[in-house]
Length: 162
Image (tube, rainbow, N blue to C red; front, side):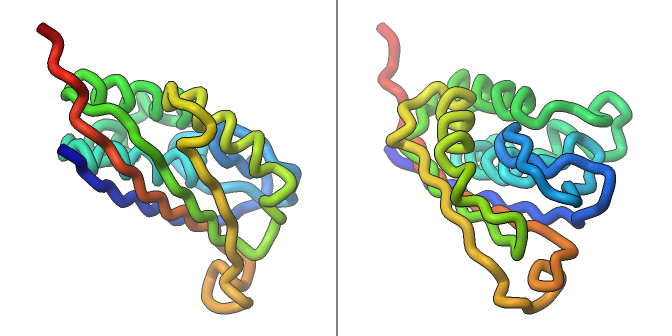
């Protein structure tokens, strides 16, 4: 059996915060605002894998009003969610990620981001792809005020152990 999951996250950009994608710090004058570290890509991946496994969403497990998750490392949260997905009998087939922002340019960091996601998801880098788009100057993203990530993933039911 196969299940598809979709994850989406949007964060305001603000000065004084690091710009993180899959835990990779990208040089830029602004970073994602958020209760945790604000890693928009990690958050979207979490929602995609949890949704595909029908386990919930990031807000259920790590609510933004809970001080326990203040400044949390989103890649650690992703690893915790992968464990939940695996314990529910699922394994990742692949993920496809799209980051939408005007700046910074993502392409020079793509392979590091893919490798970080592959490591956290305990999969081969060939099962992870990352691309970036701009908003062509439109809306909050186009004005450089926000960054968005969209992720789709495919899970398959793991083989039952005898």
